[in-house]
Amino acid sequence: MLRIFDTTSNTYSSLLYAKTAPNFFGPSALVVRADVALEQLRQQPPTGVSKGDGGALSPNGAEGVPTAPIPSAGSAKPHRFYGSVEIDMVRPVKSFDAILNAVILELQRTPGAKVKVTLEIEAKAPSGFDPSEVGIVRDNAKQLKFTPEATGFD
Image (cartoon, rainbow, N blue to C red; front, top):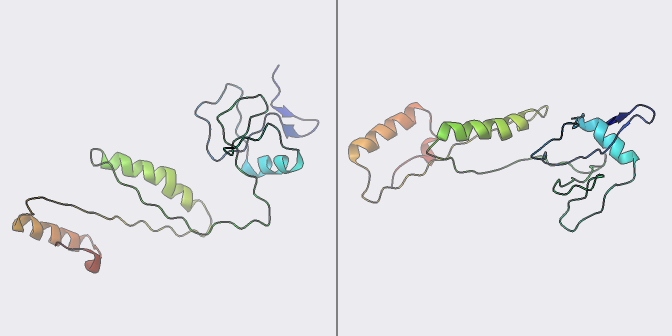
């Protein structure tokens, strides 16, 4: 019988705290609250063998799951996130949805966090844009409240 939680010591066996989840969870895998995991990891000596790339061997010897440093209560937390990504124009809605779910919504989970998303568009046409298209795009951009000083053609 595999025991994941030891009720006598009130600890989880083979506990890993990682920045990214492994690609595959075994049938005995269990997700625990971060505060519970961090408290247990602070109280127990480190397990595994430290590796030069920042990862560690898990207690059962499996490699490939980098372990994150355990934040201490006094360590400075980052206060700002910034990022830039190019949207796949073949499937722009799917790309934006993935970004929304994987990054934006995660950032909004922090109480008091203010998240601002700015869409930047750059289009180039070797033969130039037709004047009728320029007018349509300008009118649409104005209706959609594009920032006037950051929008235009040249």
